[in-house]
Image 1 (cartoon, rainbow, N blue to C red):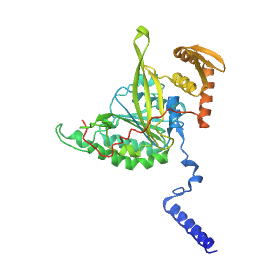
Image 2 (image 1 turned 90 degrees about the vertical axis):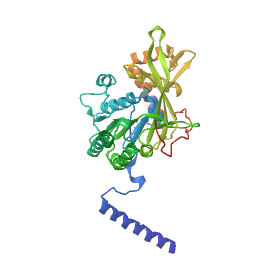
Image 3 (image 1 turned 120 degrees about the vertical axis):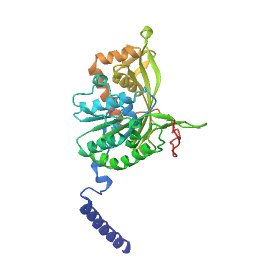
Length: 355
């Protein structure tokens, strides 16, 4: 009896404090997780079906995503495809071009609506991050891409001399900005993608010497971190190189299992081969089967060789749409097998000098 009375008193006390918190901070400021439907993470397509599957559905809304990798590995291409997917769904997209290197023609080819894309080319890192914060707080933008963290130069560094030794300015800038905007991103449901570059740590004999720029704050605030690499150059006979094969490792994922691997082709001048992504995923899940060089669907041979199979699906959009629906249904049921890689164990806990 004493226990029941005690529990009743605790429930009353809990109800009072919850009401007090809502009066002080607004309705919805605290809730039971099971009742909070708005806290279920929605996603937007990345533009590569294999990557969507590896991410557990796509890029999470209301979260920070970091895409990093070597030069010419497909970071900007992947971000532009994500923008195009958001715009196709009627969303608003913004691109903060800190590198001043956005190519409108290439963006148009990838499917980006350049007439309605919001573009900012700020002169300082402070200005860039303030623009991001204001866009996010408006709740009127669905995706913001920052290209890149390495180009977010602090004002003090720009106004100083070339020889000035200003240690940690960019890391402190990123840490302060992320503390400020992370909560606003969650409330707005906006996807914020930071593109980042790699540097080499000095004096590393064992382990991975690579480190991303801008300190370690972004690693902690990002819900998803994608490590993208070029693993193969695509060639066709005497025509020479026509694209690359990219591999993305989900190095961190707070909304789905991490360390999954996705691969896709990036065709020069055309972007990610979305039909190629779908064919690879269909083969992996046995929606499309391959015996020798022949690909078959529903028991019928459709093409000999991967290139011919891709061409067949491009010429038969109704078949491609049917296969994509089957794949997404499999993802919803959680029956898609994924290749994985172990953690590198090189999340740099200590900031070291960069070159």
